[in-house]
Each structure stands twice: as C-alpha cells, then as structure tokens.
Image 1: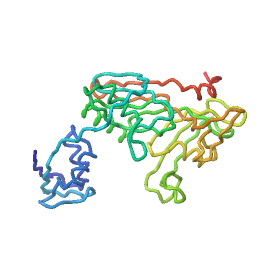
Image 2: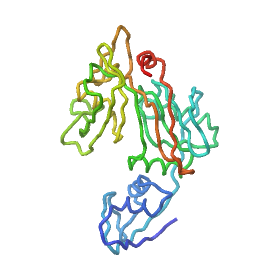
Image 3: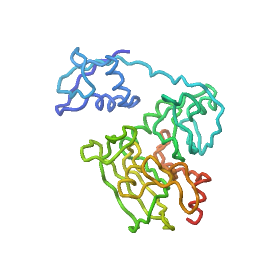
Image 4: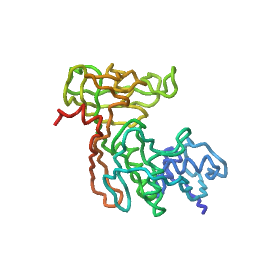
Length: 296
C-alpha cells in the first residue's frame, strides 16, 4: 500500500516522528525501518531517518507488513504474573536471556512464549532485562498493544521499581543520580558515566535497610538506559552485590552471590485497551529473598 502525504505545518519536524504521530497504529521505529529499506521518499527522493520536513513537502510511504518472529518454540518454565488478550507479564528468573541473539540462539523467554502461545499469538518485545536481572517484563500480544506500551516507555510514562543490594553503607536515606551514560572506552560491552555521552540517565533510590557492609535499596529509573542501575551504582562507589562486571563483591556475610542482586519488583503503566492504570508486582527469587528477609 502506498500513500502520499503533504506536510502542511510550518515548523520543521523529524519525518519519522511526524509519520508516527499521524499513523497511530504504527511506531516511530516502524517508519525508521521503512526509511532504511528505501520505502519512504520526500519530494520523490530517498532521505535519511533524521530528515526534517518543511512546509509543502510531499512524503510518499510504501507501507509493508512487519515480519513475524521466527523463533523456535521451546519447553521452558514460565512464571506468569498476568495475561489477557493484549499483554502477558512474566516474572523472569535470573539466568535466562530475554530474546535470541548472537551466542543465545535458544533457551530464551521468547522461545518459551512461542511454545506457550502455540501459534495463537506472536509475542512482541517492548523492553528488556539483563540476563542476570530478575523480575517483571511485559510482552505485547498484538501490534496495537506493542505500539501503546512502546510509546509509554518513550514518553517515560512507565513507572519501574527495582530492589537492589549494593556494596557499602549509603548514609543518605534517598538520592538521585543524574549522569550521562555511554559505552565504556575500555570495554564496549559495558556502560560508563561519560560527560561526552549524548543520553542523560536518571536514577532515584531510597534506602530500605542498612546491613553489615551493604545497603538494600528501592530504585526507580526515570530513563531506561542499558545497564543504567548497574553503571550508576558503580559511579557512586556502591556497585551491586554479585555484579563482577561492574566491580561488585561476590561474597557478603559469608554468602556467595554469582549474579547482580537486582530485581524488577513492580511496574505501573496504562493498559493498551482499557486505558486504566495497571500495576504488577513480582516475588523475589530465592537468592534475593535471603538477603532481603529482614525487610518488610
């Protein structure tokens, strides 16, 4: 399907943002993909994703169906917190990868969901958690739900609360970290605070309890950057317990922890169909139950 649109506004606007604003059933990333595939033209010419529109520009869009996921169904245990015709919310266990990638072609949450749905739905990924992080993750079951939740994340309208255990005693009862994150020059797989980084990251925390050599926190992320909590906690010299990549200790109180003590505890957002605010909570995994057992 092809459509021609005349840009009638006088202020300049990014083409991908404009197209997503007038076509509510498609996301900005969808139009970015069309641009890369030479399916979008301005005044008959192929343009970059960052193209700024001017009054009178003629935009030609060749719409195409998004490719369905081709992921092998696998029998993997799932802890489902909530499900309806639009979304499914899962309490991810530590150690499982969210989606197939290089080095992780199978054994992921998406592989598990493909088997669980049995061909009735194709799960859409709208956000991510690290392999070693546990807790709540949302999957959409249709395009409409995917777009709705994705846009809520883009607008920072999704409220995510984590539980974390960090090295050392934090004297403040609460705090806010505002520091830009970028790829570490020493290790491109890690993120680090970099004054030249373009993306600002904001993390808020509240102390739940102080123990012998470590602090238990409730953490809220205002932005959703890669490894945000892990890198911000290292930045303030309180790395997550068990997070070897970011300098966290493996042993606390005689107990050894082989993954970062970080759990996506609850999440609040607007349901894509009912427009009502929904909130879900995920039970702590066993390794974090032990370290948080005295917190009410």
